[in-house]
Length: 516
Image (cartoon, rainbow, N blue to C red; front, top):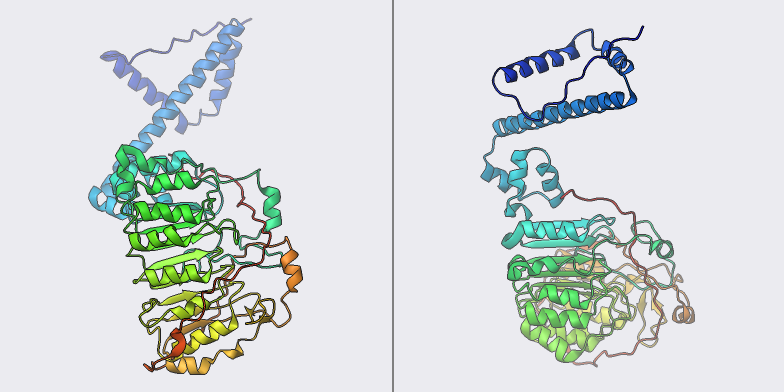
């Protein structure tokens, strides 16, 4: 004998009033108590019997849909109530008021602020304050950030934006700069990330940074309000940002003090022209070439001249991986009277002759850090002469000198003949005369340098970012005796050999970064 079908009431379309509300409350309360009773496992059997008692397939489907809908409504109601109770609990238990919470959040990194905002509605409200996004750091090891994330963060910051860091971090930071120097080498090097450059070439095209050339366009919103008070802008390995995009971004950043450009496909000349035109307050300029050794775009006049005249407050200058001749180096160092940090690492054309023109009243007197690491044409005689000047009492503020070279220093007569022995440096005398002086002078073992003919004809020339951590420290007393080191001995404008360089873009797995 067939069971009699049990009628299923239609779901209410609105909340009943009066006695009906009381009845519904009582019904729901009784229903929820079933979870704590011993009859809970029998619900499956009851529901199966109801399904089997249905008169038709249509009625069965309707009953199943209503059960699913009712379960979903209860689930959402439970989650919503849990969130409300959690937010109320946090607002009561959290010891800080909203203004101090915002202050705390403003000290966190960008990703931590996003995580905090997802914790509860109270934190979310506090994390929406512009002060929490005044220093945006979206640097990642693998591509995780897109234009939407950047635009949202910049718009949240608005006029409060002071610092913006975007792109891919290629490896551990060096001691005297936020990026490590690239270098020329005839060996097949491996990047600090663990991938050889040949491996990166095979991966390129499948993976790339998902930031496009318009990733900085939000700085121009609201008549340039987000960029108006921006103090720091760091851009690393964003392959799609070009000269035009970078120039447009700099045009709305008149208060910029710190600019770092690493691995972008932009010209040094055009970048300096934009900085000279729009960023007159700049104090730190860091530029690492994406096409090491091939960028010879920098011109003495008017580019260097305008840069020196329009940016008089510059005290830190880093130009890595450029064809930077000695006469251009002289113009830059002598022009910036406040210069304290100078880094020309991996400069292909520098011989070191520009050092003769510094010191005394000729500029470079305030230098504290001088880095000439892995400069292919840097000569042993120029390094020896400069260190003699330091021992004699010149460059009194200099405390750090790096002349390390993985191919050794060039000889005076032939740059293919390399010096791998640092014994020519009078370290004991230097440490005796200059207390606290730090010298890096590391060279490869004798005979490890490839033949000159091999190097000129080789296409396997790559970047290498790994810095050594060994330092040579010493102490001393400063002598104020005059030195003849400051003599005017040549321009140092030597021509370099043509070499082919293979540059591969950054690549890695893509992943979601933030839920905005």
